Image (tube, rainbow, N blue to C red):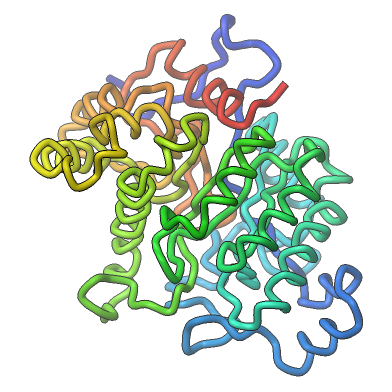
Length: 368
């Protein structure tokens, strides 16, 4: 085994796509970039009040970070502005630099889903989608957007999905795993129905501000605890979707969990199966072991890549999850970015590389 696993281009994978990045974070040079996409009322609201999310620190990250803008020191554009805000530099450093065929944008700022003002949240979601189109998707055909919706207002979320679904520049619907209630609750089901109806997958990227502590035991003291709590959030989301019966009612629904890691998935599946085997009479609508829904309806992204010791344990993990359920992501431009040439410390077959680095994303997003 070599020290690092390089990304080769096997002949059998040399088709339309060789490398798809499922997690790129775009940014704005200033909040004024949203102004062209907001009515005068909401421009005034943004300037006067700003956002009002379900946390104590309005329009700031929910926890202090160890580096500015949570980003690599080399990702700051030479023209100014935060990382991810300059398309020419993003092209040069990331898309061209790593020969990326398709990159999926996952906007995080302004958090429309977490806004307390319901009408502003709807206006903000629409503006963020228009902003993705105007700044990134129209000038750069290699990029795909995420449909931002307000899951706390399902009717408005469905309306926004219906508005955007025919535009193939949007690859997925983006929801936050940290929400007021677990996403499997039936009040959210109209969103899942719309996703299936339009053939769009749903992506849950770590984050969101539901107004609750990051952990079930309360607010953590340290960033390292906050960072690890993202796994707990992902587990809660998966359990809710499975046990509420979402995948039984919507068997064609595809959901990805982004930036939450994946080494915990096998043990979590075993635990859910064990609980279901003894308490399945409480949830008769869950007709299969939970691990079956995991393998059928759920995908994961590679970043952050766990590195067990010995490294071969990661191979066993991949076999349990299925190499057809893992999609590559870099988390560009953030500090824990993964380079596709060095991300895997285990050997992969040519078929596994082709699947993880591109093929699985083609299937998940329904790319042509």
